[in-house]
Image (tube, rainbow, N blue to C red; front, top):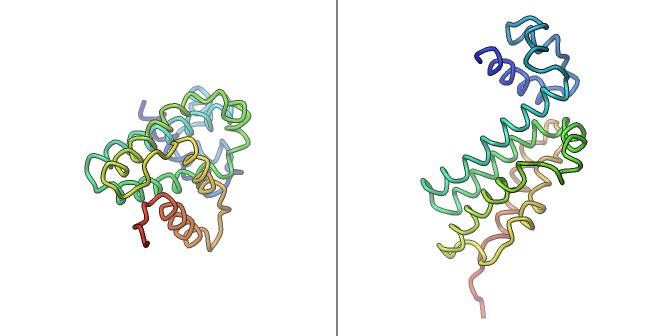
Length: 177
């Protein structure tokens, strides 16, 4: 199990840095032989999909933790920041993930992910900080832009600007009449 976890950790860093990271380079960085890597992950696609499921589960689990520990608007913002971090990993791997999940239609993570969004939206609506009645699927579509940000020098600043726009659009507005 330690080898598997180390391979996943190294692969996450490697794919975030370069979508062309080789299996041999990942094995070497993880301190395992190529044979060990292929015993755990028989194909590059298998490694990518396991990494995807592993990373998205961490994002899903984080929503409930943040909602319990922080004010709703802060919890939502921090969760979206983690979604953006996850998006940097997914950016170059999305073709493989979409092919394996039939464009997302067969993705077993979809339901839990939208449920995580709903937890944060409900907490924000209950506090009056977020609009009531927001549809988690619509909000997911809105912030899916976070994993479409191309890597580069301005990716961080662009992420912050987009997060500001997203969160601002979900917030309630005082009646100015």
